[in-house]
Amino acid sequence: MRKTRIALLEKGLQWETTWLDLAKGEQKKPEYLKINPVGKVPALIDDGVVVHDSTIINEYLEDKYPSPPLLPKDPAMRARARSFEDYADAYLAPSLFKILMNLRKPEAERDQEKIREGEREMRDHFAFLDRELNGRQFFAGMLSLGDISFAPPLANYERAGYKIGPEFPHLRAWWERMKSRPSFARSLPPD
Ligand SMILES: N[C@@H](CCC(=O)N[C@@H](CS)C(=O)NCC(=O)O)C(=O)O
Image (cartoon, rainbow, N blue to C red; front, side, top):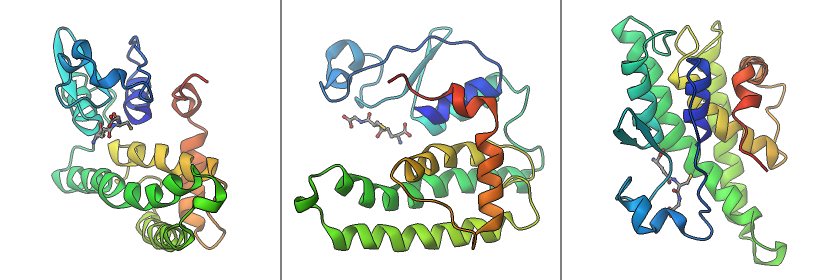
């Protein structure tokens, strides 16, 4: 998943990716289920240690390779970084999914009400994130796992044709900062 590739790149780590064809169900084949019995990507194998779930992988990378840090030192700020990481997975991603799962369908089959609901939620998320960034370069003071977890869903909104409007100037500026980091372009999946 891109979130883990961004963390690996920000930490200057080298790795090799084995891409699975999810549409063909390669993640459910016995050889992969030996690595991740849940049958989901991503999974990381590091020195023989297997870790799955993108959030847990990023926490593992932070523990094993603490420099450069992707979590602040202060416990309160660490909690803040982690709470944004959770927000991206638990709240933002389901709203994005309401839009994307419909845009993938032929136009006549799309649930327009679901799309509008997803769009309303997207604006509420943007307003919240914009408020939280007011006066900050990053969500928890420094680039952290919290910022990184928003990059893939925001890139997906953008790819689907949605822009962060001028009414959210702090989020917009943050997004430009994230996109200008080399890890953003270098983490793109192959075509
Ligand atoms: N919470 C997990 C979610 C993993 C997940 O849902 N992965 C998707 C791809 S983004 C997957 O493997 N889908 C294939 C499937 O469910 O069979 C994480 O962040 O790693």
